[in-house]
Image (cartoon, rainbow, N blue to C red; front, side, top):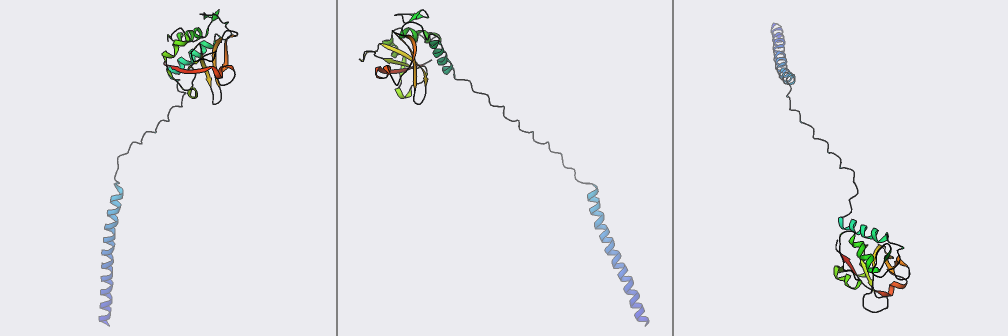
Length: 194
């Protein structure tokens, strides 16, 4: 019986010693983790990336200089609408077909030959289907192959080409190119480099 008591006592001591070590070991581990938490690593603050600036609101692109010059030519020609015909004329008092073209291009500093038959030499040939505003169109009002009339293209759509020119009977006026009297009198067209 004493032996049994001794063994029980010994077991209690060993158990309490073992628990104490476990507690100490656990305490040590806890202390380490607590210590590491008490001095947290401080990472350098990263500067936030700047917010991208939105692109500026789109503004309409200015017309190329050549287009604005052509606009000026057409505007000048249109300003003579209704001017009476005058052979060799170049003013609002009277004007002939080549005078209209010559004066209109002169407004942008472009000097063309003064006579309609010589004007094609100042430009590059253009096919009828490729006409643009400002192009010069040439005719023979008698149906031959010699140039005796000129006009300026003022507008182009998929079905319609409008020209301004000077007629002997009605002076400076607008007419369609693809219908009516001038349709069959057409000879060629050129584009003037501005």
